[in-house]
Length: 306
Image (cartoon, rainbow, N blue to C red):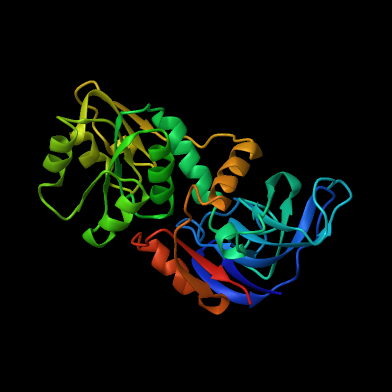
């Protein structure tokens, strides 16, 4: 099969190669992939001990074509959404992939494989953000870097809970963020953006969510005394706490599939929108990865396999 691989531990370059189709185990299925999601970590998020070439990727959607003896909840021919996070046998950036039965969710009939492939990682992270925020109806939330795959979902999930949202992104994305549920938007290139958020929130927001790396230090300035700052991209250690504000790094949490299934059902019912900025052909997957790594995407990028 054709797959995008890392060739060694010493280089993070990704190449298109011919590799063997992975063999299933008793609790896994083999999936013919229709599309896979593109993530900021896909180039280097691999297990510590693997054989090279190693197929990268963490999420996708496709059709089950083979299953192990212990797989009882899914059948050959079913379309599924799946994750392949840190699998020794490789990831989703290929024509075929294996996945554990526990990592499968049925693809609703009214969603395309491209939509399905865009959900798992951003969806799980957005659910984790909402759990960490733990805000209530009428509370104020600022989201730094809100136009990407995670932010667009957090806006909608927070709006569902009645949370009032201010969101930052480049000016071209403001109307789009408001259409998803943001009440207030600011351009991070505007020298007065912090002042504008504080004015909107009557002196400071209850909680700030710093999604993009390096945004925590500025975001804490607009949190009210005794409020909460949550960082998503690991820069909590660089933020100096002040004014009795709690600074917390978002932790990855165990989720039951029921919570992801509920989110996917909301998407299939058009209660939550999946925002796909662009669909790339298979041969252009590395181009998609490089665009994602600029952190300037609007929503999600996905790669289609024809």
